[in-house]
Length: 475
Image (cartoon, rainbow, N blue to C red; front, side, top):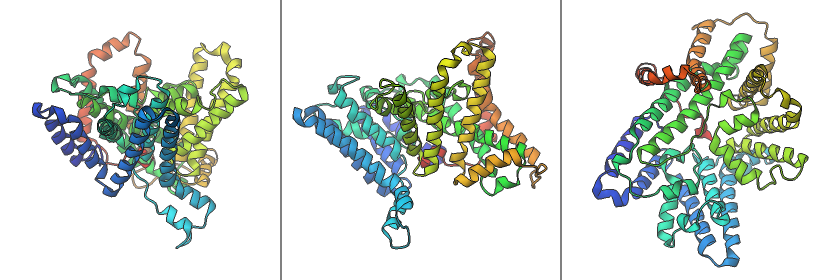
């Protein structure tokens, strides 16, 4: 069910009305569970059973990690993590393994695996389950009694709610149990921060429906074989246009998720923090998809040893984390290459860090680094957009070698590039406003901020693009 669909808004409206009725306060959590399962079942009802199976694994594992016999607690926690990973491996990566190592001819063993459905959101709710089990086992953040009540039924209900809560179920943010479960309780309509809800949802829907969906109409020209007809200028413009599109699409989704969670008085942490102003790859990953990067750091990078086991292991750990982070995005080798690209960039950046310390406060150097990071990040997005390595290499080659004149199709190439720039402009302005947030011009921007929100609503009404599925639904 799309956040941008009418049926979703109807589901939220009905749930909202029932949720805040005083006689139903005691079943607020149950109402959200029912709505969330309806939301998830909209396209593939049978896959709700997989979600419930995943929840049951995490319920049993986390409960007996706390209340089981002391000598068995490690077994329950390790088993829970392994079972979560096996479910993810089976449903998401079986096709990749089958295509890489087995025959996929009709009737073969490999054909069975490539026909397995990919449950929407499985990467997100699997990671949530792992975070729950690890946090309970390590007792790192809070008392286990706050996360795991003595009543098994109460615990099961809370974990089902935690994993199924509809705003974050499909594409995150990856919410951690120690952040979410302590928030569970009776909510009243007077608790809603209406200003925050309005601002977040307006910006989220604007980024998705006006910016990302309109850019998608033009960046379709990146797909093979269409890009072979484009000029060098077009190829570069489309490349950066797609970079802005993927930001607007996923940041838009995250803001919508955060906004609807706030509507029901639950707080999620920010998932994007103006990533395209980053002047290093390390900074980029502190600003882009923050819930994933922080998860990978806490539950993979640190357990591998982080930077505590020597220089070589640090570089290796960075590469491993980003390689697996790339594969998390999709069961294709192009995603692993994308992750490897970022892993190598992080390692090289760390290696060269000491030699550039003297330049770190130089404004021109920082601008140069910022442009460099943005360009390389944008080039890497081609691995998301194009389906084969050959197409990626051809695309990049044509940027440097294309001697064709500007290609004119029925809409006109120059006109298309103008539209790409215009629909990219809000993302550029969005980042520029952040850069001046501590400077005097920001005083005037804040005074008229509701003019900007009014304009966003106006463009939502008159210039929304054709509704497209969120890019991260496939992950």
